Length: 468
Ligand code: BG6
Image 1 (tube, rainbow, N blue to C red):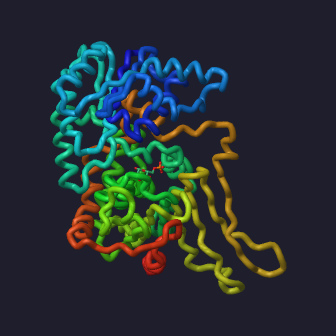
Image 2 (image 1 turned 180 degrees about the horizontal axis):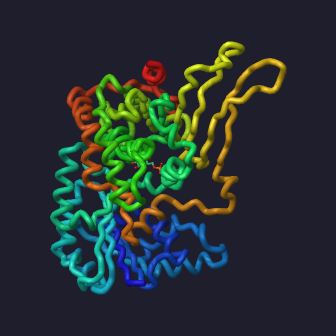
Image 3 (image 1 turned 90 degrees about the horizontal axis):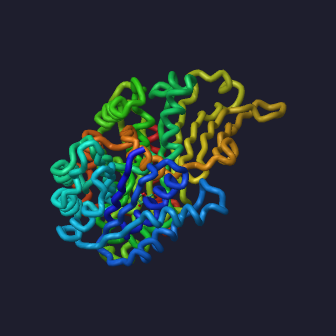
């Protein structure tokens, strides 16, 4: 295997500490990285090498190695981590980092940074000579969301990136695509013949995507107050779930075959209108640090997406997403239609609809509500679940973290789970007019109590959409 240098920019931040380094460690401890791999951190904060390693160590867990060898692996990993600090536009700081890199090594640059500093950072990477190696080794850059605040700012960001990196080197990460159950959606749909004929408007009445967190914004007020829940999770993570549920079957699993199919359906999704949603804000949000006291930023949304193609016309996709709700869960619920003529309606109440539930987290699993006769002398029905709970079905198997699987794909040059620029443009087109309208008119969200189910109106509206 080749030599590999992984350079994490924004290395003192939360994302790097909580997700990126632990994922790199998980790959390292399984022997999935080249023998000669090294990890470089760069950020503005001044830290000693020990201070940096201490920060990384806090989040490392040995899920893949026996406990007795865990300490050894951690030590070996930390010995390969080195930290550099400096301003993102400091030529000296970047040159110092550049002088450490191995000319024969492949390079991954991970921008774990707010987009406002992307242009400076990519410019500094370019001018420090780090984009030149021996010509045989590859260079890739991983970019984290948010990719802009709307179509225009996303395009501008892209232009900046393209000044230094050609599209084929760019890996736009959406960590939801790395989640085990999200990767399973294509398998569920295309490897199980029984679902194929049923997967369209003729048999499916509506799809609900429910994304809830029971925490608030956890000190991220400076970011969140400028973005809000639609930009934070709907335009990216949850829209990706919609595309996986509705895309046609690709010709192969090759990156472009998959992404062409996703793009096709993204372009069929209608732009969201203001009467297609309810916005909410948890009470107390405006008192969070770095949040404007008169903030109208939504922490909750319930919205309907419509898809203008033959397969999905008239099937509402209801997306509910919120922070400060009563529990933490992400799931997709596919609600089937009840049979057009149902012989049982003449003799008892009509049986309820089938539902397929894809539980992304916590407790990954697939559940299918099937209508059964309740044992007894009367004809009564009840939906009962067929359960495929990962915990029991795959007991003993470690479920990889999303970042582990995506980072390994970056290193292997596998792009199917990364967002292509045209996908990103189409995703922004769906939301940009709405987001501009909300911002310009300072649309007021409904206030809901922290750790409840969000504003009541959201549920009333959902029922109206679904029963049309
Ligand atoms: C991030 C959002 O992209 O995803 C956060 O910025 C959110 O606000 C997080 O909490 C959720 O990720 P996960 O993997 O915990 O569901």
